[in-house]
Amino acid sequence: MEVVIVPDAKAGGELIAEAVAALLSRKPDALLGVATGSTPLPVYDALAARVRSGALDPSRARICQLDEYVGLPADHPESYRSTVLRQVVEPLGLTESSFMGPDGNAEDVQGACDAYDRALAEAGGVDLQLLGIGTDGHIGFNEPCSSLASRTRIKTLTEQTRQDNARFFDSIDEVPHHVITQGIGTILEARHLVLLATGAGKAEAVARSVEGPVSALVPASALQLHPHATVVVDEAAASEL
Ligand code: GLP
Image (cartoon, rainbow, N blue to C red; front, side, top):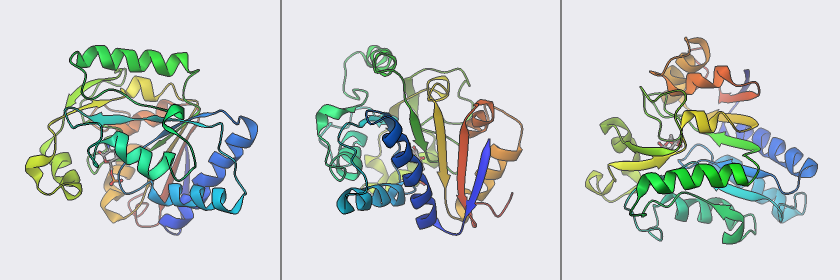
């Protein structure tokens, strides 16, 4: 695992956008796994700036989702589908046809999860998966105690994660209790994992993930098992390393 400490979130965004641009110049139709939350926004801003300036042509790139709320209408502004379309797909000038995600409204939720794992494999696998980290060390929505071999499946959010995500909704009562997430085993199949963490609130989770033992109690520690994992942290998030 490579750990890169950058001065601030903007520098982290630039660094990761550079890695994405390098990947797309090598493999224009790469499958990019993207994450939601506030942390990756500087990456998306840096990518969109490159597209606007003509430095990056992502027109053949494909985008896939990491996780999704269960039961939130797909066109709800806070569904992860809507969020990724708004924050990534549209700013990069792509269309929904280059985008894939799990169906959070399927009657057979586990069937939808299995179908998504199959779709990722049939698409050739994820080339670069961008990850954030929860304050409890979760990746995607793999909360502590998730099996390190888990596949895409339905999970129940912890109260902490619902509180963390309540800022995107009018009240915590609107935050769904259930989600679909790529499993840790699914995430580990991506060819390159890039985790970005910024701010002092993530410092403890980063330290436990990077320097602690590999443990299901800290899902992001599974990155230690991956042959090509990059952890990009700003100085605040690195403060407990
Ligand atoms: C949610 C998402 C994660 C994300 C986490 C942290 O739980 N499912 O993918 O990493 O939030 O979000 P933020 O970057 O806003 O702190």
